[in-house]
Amino acid sequence: MKKKKITPFIGYICSTPGILLITFFSILPFLMVAVEGFQVDGKWSLDNFIVLTQGRLYRIVFRNTVQISLQVTLMCLVLSIPVAIYSAKDSGRWAPLIMTGVFASFWISILVRTYSWLVILAREGPINDLLLAIGLISQPQTLLFARPGALVVMVNVMLPYMALPLIGFAANNIDWELIQAAQSLGAGGLRILWKILLPILLPGIIAGSFITFMISLSFYITPMLVGGPREIMISKQIDQELNRLFDSGRAGSLSILLLLIVFVTVFITMLSMKYFERRQQAKISFGI
Amino acid sequence: MKSELIWRGFVICFILFLLLPAVIVIPASFNGARILYFPPRNISLIWYQEYITGSTWLEPTRLSFVIAIFSSAITLAIATPAAFALTRIQFVGRDFFKTMFMLPWVAPQIVVATGIYILLLRLHLGTPRWAILLAHVTISFPIALLIISSGLERLDKDMEDAAASLGASQAIIWRRVIIPSILPSLLAAAMLTFIISWDEVLFAWFLGSSKGPTLPAKIFSYLQIGATPLPAAISTILLSITGLVVSIGLFFRSRISRKETI
Image (tube, rainbow over all chains, first blue to last red; front, side, top):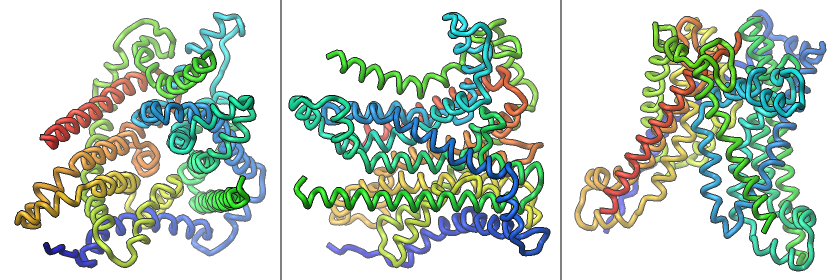
């Protein structure tokens, strides 16, 4: 039986449309942004970058971006770890179901998800109604447009990005019997968590945190709608510069700043993965 | 065991936390007044009426729909050959292409949108619709590629070999064996790319014009002024359409897999 080998030429032909698309709609835009960042009124200059280091505004934008992204990532992590551990139960019997439930939230548009929180946290919304009814507050509070409310909404939107990789990883790597064995030896819950579960979950934690953090960095829609002026992140500032102040130069330099933060994040993540991998190897070779 | 219940309760609350908020738009849409009371007051369909009457909202809806359909079609047209090339053809630079194809996924969308905007500005092209369309195709491409590739990889090579050994020509193998097998993946990719484009806000906002926005872009600009029950009515309709698309897709998927087993 003859097996026909397809010439490599066809491979290039089939890939060309995709390559062209990405070149013109991913790579070229990047270059345009870089070019804009280095230009002021058509002349090459580093002004756009120098201006970023002066003035409180850009420092606040930078700090907010990193700070909020870290906060959101951490909260998503804390919420997702118990779910991930539970999904490893019964050899991951419930994992597919749980993941489907989490995945279902992707079908809901981000606008709907964000807007629904505008309804929930509104002054006349259910949360305020509840708090008034319990008597915790005497007047409806503005829960939105401030850090706590914004964080809740952002966590709600970002949670699937953390939960899905973590649950998938946990279901494949955690042996529930290990936990039971440790329990029968007298280990308490916290100890099991710290000494056994977290080390096993570490690659999954790094992966999920990486994805969540990266997306949070360039987050635009949700912070725009539920964040207050103190929650301004870099995407909103880029939008301001580009669409309202018509300063494509600063939009460019801010975009490059964002890319730099992204690269640093990638770098740190890869370093930590290498580090933990080496520790794992060391443990194995020492027979631990 | 009591702790078992706590664990399970936590997981259930977790999933409810993810899914329940969206459900609240449904009752909120029936508020008669401009304020988002909950439970809704002055029950009325006035916001649905506002959505359906006139072209203020229907035109963006139509635009979004058209863009989504074309985005889905074009993405599939580009991603299917690419998936085929990546999974079945050996050529130099295949891995490099593979990495490059994932680029739109990892790139910060705001930077890309800014770049496209500046590119269009420099070329004096304004805010054409096809820019949004191609931006949608670009961001849908990686995941469509992933889905179709995994569909191709799961293909049973033995079936093709068996057909070939029975004397089937390459064309027939394609028509009768390969295409029906990847049809579920194609459908899934089509559904997903449609919804990605239909719901997409950022590129639609950055690259769209204020006179002819897509539906999500218009909702987004509307929400920046203030929140009324109108987006709730629209969201309810949007959710229903999404639900409809997903159900149709799942229905066809089950029909196709049933045909396969026969």
